Amino acid sequence: MSDKEQKDNTEKKKQSIETEKKEDTGSIKKLTQTVFIIAVVIFIWYLFADRYAPFTDQARTKTVTIPIVPKVSGYLSEINVHSQSIVKQGDLLFQIEKKPFELRVKKAKASLDNISQQVGALTATVKSAAGRLGVAKAQLDRAQRNYNRTQQVLKKNPGALSQADLDQTETTLTQAIERVASAEADLEKAKQQLGTSGKENAQLREALITLEQAEYDLEQTSLYAPADGVIESFNLYNGYYAQAGKPLVTFIPFGTAWIEADFRENSISNINTGDKVEFALDVFPGKVFEGVVESVGYGVSYGEKNDKGSLPKISNSQSWLRDPQRFPVIINIKNNEIKKAIRYGGQADVIIYAGNSNILNFIGWFQIRINSLLSYVR
Image (cartoon, rainbow, N blue to C red):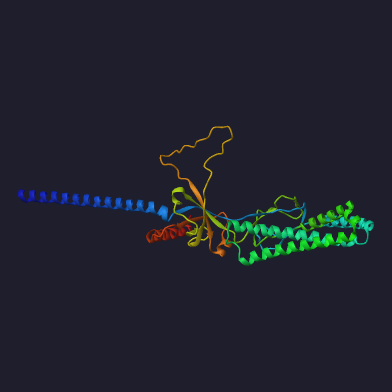
């Protein structure tokens, strides 16, 4: 091969190498530009999505909890439930030994009979009326407690109970009030028939009150389920001494669950009551459920409470970006069957459709479903 040919080959190789370098440089530039454009698009999407389709994974399911508290003290003679027992409204949960309270009723009746002999035969009518009044008051107390619990549930979650349940609770309370009024009228009539001496007799009045209290206490030895639900925090056995005012177990009524989602402060400006919500639960991986925004929190505690007279304590951020404050958003669950099936205190992923952008809503729709699938592996 001549020198000229060798020189030509060398030139061709140099040109080939330079061409490859230019092509590589061009490819790197294109890749860099592509990555930069994607980053800009993601950043812009994040800015808008955080305000018009905000997402959070800091959310938990919550519910109303009702402590089952006895009003009288005594040993448990009957336990009809255990931990995680599913019960219906009116089911007998616990029975406190009745014998001591039955004896008190008998003693009160005997005392009243003894006094009745002194004030006349009509005292027997007073005793009967007093007994009916005591039972009526006990029934009213129970009906009032059921009604109060219903109102607490509605305050937390207006859609938790059906209209039929509400009507039944109100009707039961109204009937109990009427029975008390009727019993009081009968008692007053019986006392009037006794005459002045009977009505003013201090011993007779004391005996009547004692009998009413004894019958009321006897009624309170039976503890019933206030609604359909499940028993938690169970640690009891037959013979356990139940103390008045001290909770025995925790009762969780069905259909009262909601979700409390913590959103960053700069994400809640466009969230309004009634906005559509989709959420995924770890207990149901791969599934997405619907809800609506019920309320948005207006205040949170941002630090330790200072004692009066002391200087304020200032918390310094350790990073160059200030940590965002989060506010709770209460979400009403639409599906009543899900309210019964979810585990209270469980984690959830939540997205709120606070805007009308079809693009952002579609991306959010896709995102929540990806997160629901990730529940299989986390």
